[in-house]
Amino acid sequence: MARSAIRGSRIGAGPTGENERGPSVTRIAVTFWCAIGHSTSSIFAASAEVPEMWDCHHCDRPAGLDQHNPPAPTAKAPYRTHLAYVRERRSDAEAEIILAEALTKLRTAA
Image (tube, rainbow, N blue to C red):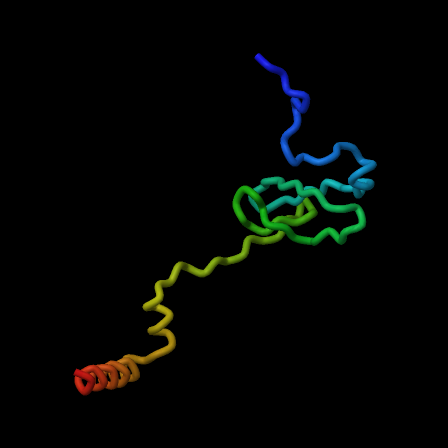
């Protein structure tokens, strides 16, 4: 079996080491907690402003920096169909008028 001179590397990997890429930025790990008790860790640059809230990676609830006082879960609106949104915008009387106009157009075009 032949051995390759570039074993352990991939094509297009580029130079290795900090000298060619420049110095890396100092990073900090920040942990956020949700109301259920999940912890979510995220890495930020030390110079970046850390947000007060972050989405929990486990349950998608808001998570905060204080483990003993996490943010309250937000109420999610129930799933609504397209027809529900249409009914919200139009009354039954308006729908009848629009339907009558559309039918008149179809009958005159035929």
